[in-house]
Image (cartoon, rainbow over all chains, first blue to last red; front, side, top):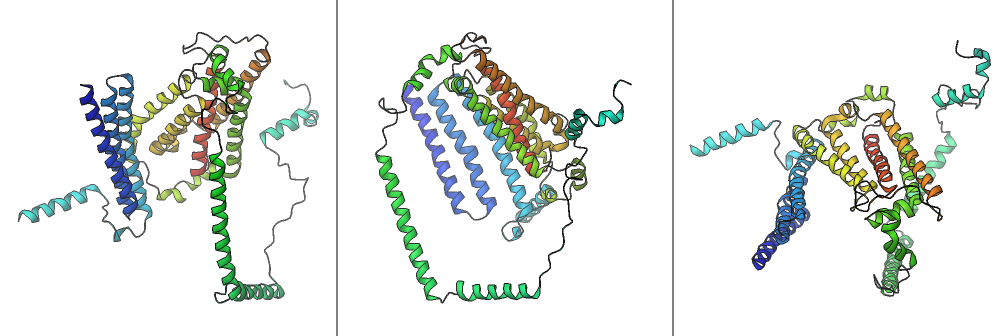
Length: 123
Length: 319
């Protein structure tokens, strides 16, 4: 049982480390700030949660495990919101945005366009 | 009339002058310092010619890319800079290799001071967290200085950046801030979940400073961060309902004075081998540790006020 827990925990930790490596690679490789934000958010949510889950499995059911679960919860709540705000600021301040991305005033416009595209594909 | 002196007599007393100075109703410079209005700078023909000649000389001689002397100088400059950097690196690494090992018993740092803290710290301070016991009892004066530094730093920032509330109301939405994304619904929803949790966690860190890692500085930082999130989500109008300039002044100054009072009482009664009048309580309980718990709370208030005031002053120019 102890061995099984160790293997499972280290597997989760390894997945988390790989995700972090991809995140760091993406941050230095991608050019547009919005793309870099996407890769940073990847590490902040998936990377940190898989690392924490691995540590939780290794630790067993104690008070520390509960604290780690709270850390995951906090990161899942805080990190996407901060990425969203940074993206919002980038859209309002970057003058030459249209050359890199398509922006919509409202989310319903994007939904309409996606519906139209879906209808075209069916035809 | 409750005042015994007449108005004329009262105006000549020191108390009148003191309260006039305190309320700032009289400008100290008027009638005492001669003041002249600024005049526009006018450039004469001679000065203009000299300036242009200097500019021409600089462009021709100093920024000339074909000037042999400058090219040679730049090459030598780079070479010397590289040699100096390498020399510095080598000498520093050489010096590091001669440093004693970390945690060695023969080190100069493991003297009787550190031993005293570790062996007698819990009995003398009543704190399970030795670091907290050290910085808030043995070295309470040092921490008092740090807290004063925070106070003076915010005072300086306020002097430089604080604007009048009327100007701020006039400027509302007409400065740089109108380009910022405001009242984001996603942030609002998340902040209404997170802010209470952050505040409770900050209070937990503050009150548990003598039992677990944490204390005034870290707890105050978390409290200030929570308030910054609140401001970002709900705006300055909502924050001013529970934290405006008056409350800021009261909290900050009373926290500093409380620290001074507690610290000086402790030093007068407890230090220098005179019997300590502040009970230490049972080690490990929440209400224990003598002066550590109140000082932690006071420092936490000070740090939280500093963090929030820095953010508000740099962003808006007022609290």
